[in-house]
Length: 224
Image (spheres, rainbow, N blue to C red):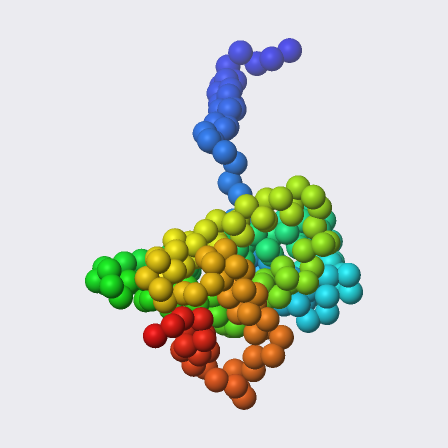
């Protein structure tokens, strides 16, 4: 039996439901760093594919080179084949951006000098892409493109066509001016072929500079 004179204790406050935060859930540290990790994997893979070859490079090699666990690259790429394509795709986008910037720097020159200045800018930019520090994607693309799937090769060919398209108008002007003796299409193919081969023999510590190479190409390709 309860004593009616005893004080009544207050009921505990009802629990207030926790409000769910609006919007997307906060990303984890790894997710926030996804872009940086992806880029690090691409750079590391490019260097390893160039040095060891695509077939001889394992995902474990790539992961170890950037301080990841062996399975971590598959968080960013479905397969090693996808990583190979990412190396080439990122490299081509970088090359296109560099080339556009080089051409923009000479667009205000007088017309009589513009075509020569544009060709010089194209050649110099291409050498920078081929031989500059951290630019391993071109040798990889030259020698490992057969490792890509058909769709990947088609997509890459479109980027290459976009890159090379900037050369034809410039060479066309030089041909009409009489400074370029060979047909435009053959000139473009031969020029790019000669420039690309430099990755096989050029040594910046022993050979000429990129500027020297550019000067030599201008003297070789064009008439005075």
